[in-house]
Image (cartoon, rainbow, N blue to C red):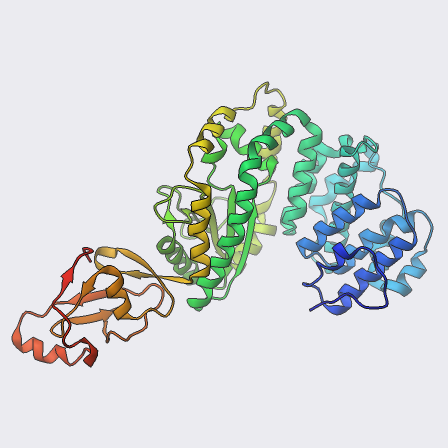
Length: 478
């Protein structure tokens, strides 16, 4: 794990303390960049640090982060490219050679490169770093405009939504994409931005908390089921919520994909297996399942989509899941399925400027006030995280949630059922004893023996601890 190097007195510990996902050499490079910035102070350093924090949280390439941090020092001629190459390496030097002069973003000629963003080749690590740094400079301009330092951001806000945001999405820079969306939205429609933010505020923090808990649950479910996969999660941005509500005229509470998770695995069978796991552990929302693997979209997009309520029998905090293979994910992010997906949103946004009143405000407030007890909801969700529950199927598919390492005996005690030595207990069709440890997704069945000759043949299948137990009594209907 990365630790701040002693002897290097860097004041910006907030950034340094978040470098655990980087190697020691990468973290040292970022630390050296921060020291250089402190030695050459410049106006707007606060905005630089806030964007750099986003890049670090996003897990962006260390060379891109370093290039972004020290670019203002280069612009003020405090250092040279030769110095940068010697101090930070060839890769950082090659990146900053493309940004030797500060982008102006003032005239159409200065902004023309935005239209070329989606045609840029991002096949090499250097190209990806260049694009990441450019997107960071765009966000920096928007932030400066929001802070009232200049008005340059207003000139590029439209183009950021139309050209830059899809590129950030394609590069999987989701945090950066979200910041670009919301900053542009804030500049283009400040009054609507403030009004919507006030409406979303009570739900937003809950959504973030719920997302963290659900990701923990999914990691555990994948582990106990022996499935290796990548989990990505996001909470819908303010601009995305605006587009959704404007298009559909729905309340905030009724948007099913405010919280979204993506599970990426190796094979198609694993996709369907995970779908079954999700539907057994959570409450599926009727009508929300789409199989784009079996029936791909016209543009070639493939994935399984489903929405669930994380706590069974509690219709609160819907979660959208996308399940796909690595190949499907690459195609959706960079292939034809990803092209110009934001054009529809952008056109809707332009049309939305004519709106005088934001729809759904009153309805969303009423929906929130009548929602279930939030504290009780998160308490139940926390139990799912910490108790490590598994799902067992009883008679007629009834689902029972139990802690891991639960035995058959404990299962029968939980459901209020006893079994005699005359009966045969099967798990997934195999006869087992009451000391058998159940696994996630197991199906338990009791076969009552009527014929006396069958009694003798089957009674030996059960372990000796079954004998002497009372005859079968089903209090739970299993």
